[in-house]
Image (cartoon, each protein chain N blue to C red):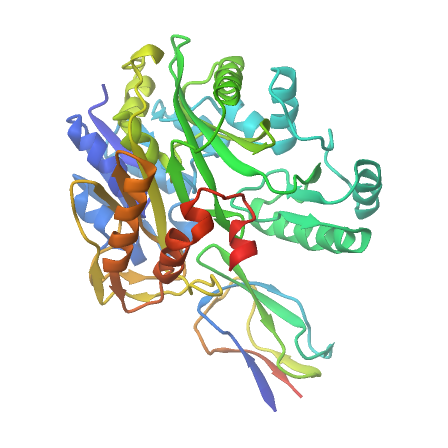
Length: 443
Length: 70
């Protein structure tokens, strides 16, 4: 096992990783921007180094500076968390050149899965079902229209290098598609430095179901069950739960088999997630996330597996800590993401937290990077905390969640807690009737 | 002379209009990026851009003027 790990991230995920490192007796090194000098992750770590100004390109995305700190602190490995450099193959290569272990998959795997077009093609060849779509990136709006005319509307336009719903838009006719092509090409260029777009047939009302897997360098791959992440706003998840409801045994078996098959075809080492859209008892590969995900806690709650700990183990070259037959899925867990944003418009709302009161209890887990007095700046993601509630059944978990959300009180800035309360009490959500259109249809 | 102001703090990602351009009410004139989200800045009324007051990449505070419009 490593003796010291640098956590190249901030906020709740940095705190989460630091805690797992420390539970293994591994020293954790934090990096912080000028804006995060007093942040919780900075305080929790065994050592902390300033990485640069508030702007992400000069701090949490500054590869040279991060590697210089890693060398100065004499760490064995770097955990990237999610976002920032977690799916940047150049960073992985640079880590390897400096003989620092990157806690994640090989750069080639990341490159292959990072581009949505190559990922789709790889999965198709590995026998995983994909949504009908363009084999190559779409070069022009006219090409997009000619695909849509052959395939039929609606279609989904996506940035090949995309993520987080940026550069992604559904279009129902020629005119909308042409307009969407121009604006998303610009957005894709702004955010991902690549204006490459591709197109897929849009499913009408699918559910977003994903399978958590972990692989080691000894060829072992296991799955840790499924999560339902259908509740999304602006194509970004807000509520996730495990296990996913009402999936037939046959579908579950096919999904899990496809996920393992996909990971094995990549000789995948690390925790990873295969995302699928599910409609009418069929599933289609959406993308693979080659990193730890925001919603990993719901899987941890129903399996008892510490996913970060397993990441550290496999990155250190050890075999997985369990066999598939030892993985037990028990109970239910729901995660709600508490964002600093207007609950109606979903626009971000920076500010200072004057009060931060979330109930605690045996079945309540709170993953957060903020506390009373924290200034939430416009520089970073608006995620304040993840509230994860567990129970024996979905009904029991949902009751606890409704009650807990009622008692949550965050003052000083706007949060989406009123929105989360409404969803948690919505008859369709309570009944489990959710698709990725839930928020658009009801809010 | 009216001003178009930033509705919230963030990085100025794109300036979509230049000096001398005509704008319609509700037209996007710039894009701010804040907390990983693109926030379009729209002209409140029709007019002509008299001056562009900020450059792309600058950090803008809420209420700061981005354009002068006449």
